[in-house]
Length: 432
Image (tube, rainbow, N blue to C red):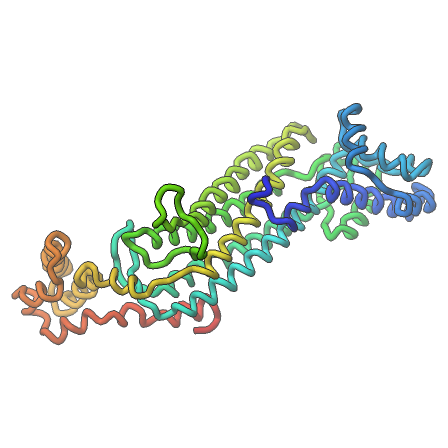
């Protein structure tokens, strides 16, 4: 997590001040519940809220001596609360604070990521309708296949990020659990009602069985979802990078007036933002395997997961937040070249209509094998010699024995391939 790829709102979730504030709220809410149950004096719970405070620098200094972050925090808190501080953390263990805090942080991070996806969806939808009927070539294996529209391409990404949003909502629910169950999770020294109170106060649900730690399959699922979302970011970024290649040049990133593309070549307009997004996606996915390896802790707990989560929590969420915002900007400002799209459609002399010709021959009684052979033998000279596909078909006696010139001409209608665009748009956007 470095400032270059961080946005303030997400980074603030992981700042020490924010973390210790959540720790304080967990302890203070637990004191409220303990006071209501008669375990500690109500005056003590009140004192925690009124006089409770902490200093990050002081906590760090204490931790340097005691080598325990939660004890350092509690010691600093006690310096402000006074004698009543002896009632803080009654029956609790460090993981109750650490795991519940991490849940709060990941929930808040998920909320920001969901907002990010909403903004990206809005940008994609606007551009999709802008180019709904703009014809372009569809490619498979990087090779011209059949016509699509640029709006239809974008509609596919919109549907994908709709799924990303749904997955983030599920991941948010999965991670939003609270553990205030004490050593080895038995509630031996703390009433389960304390956990219920803290969970409600923080917008979480009680963890059914915490074993002293919240089970890490929850976290593994959360980071796996982030990895999938990052992969969707990369897929759209990669498409834009391909479309910006000089030989294609159907779309490109916005290039500002004073922007420089290369230190050596003044003519360069490089897809630096989408290349950056490809790299950021790799970083987010890099956190998935460690999160999965954290699932298998020893017995009721160990801390082999701790160092991992201190790094992947901020890194994955901050990086994905930045990537989603950057991708939204790329889509909003994307420069599209419909003329180049049409030129590329025409580049192979009509070969993009080959399947339709083959199917028309089968409809006239020609076997599929023979129809494929007839179409392919006329297609190859177009590939190799740059000839015109329609002209070659018209000169092939076996083809013209089945299809008249008018029928052949009709098979080269571009609109045939885009007649169901509205159907797809209604499926994706609910309107066409």
